[in-house]
Image (cartoon, rainbow, N blue to C red):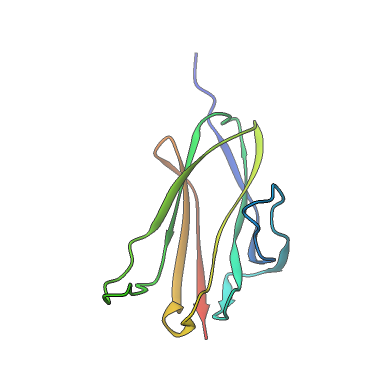
Length: 128
């Protein structure tokens, strides 16, 4: 019997209200856009709806535009995993701009993978 293939759809993307990691509520969309102003604490990303993948892991990766660490070395992508909790699940993945804002400009790519397959890939251009 063939395995069910996960269905992934991007529901919204752009600038959001601040995400509260202690809350189950997703942030609210403020503006649909892939052009993000480079402003302190601005929250951006996307909400993906994932179906037919309960109990699988979704792997996310945020590729920053060569933001340097304390030693001046570009930071590696920020990656992690989450278990898919329901058969019809909305997942917010995003980031925020932190100080100093000057070195946060450029393309920010945010990807999702399920079973080593790329299922969502969005790039946001952050500009001063």
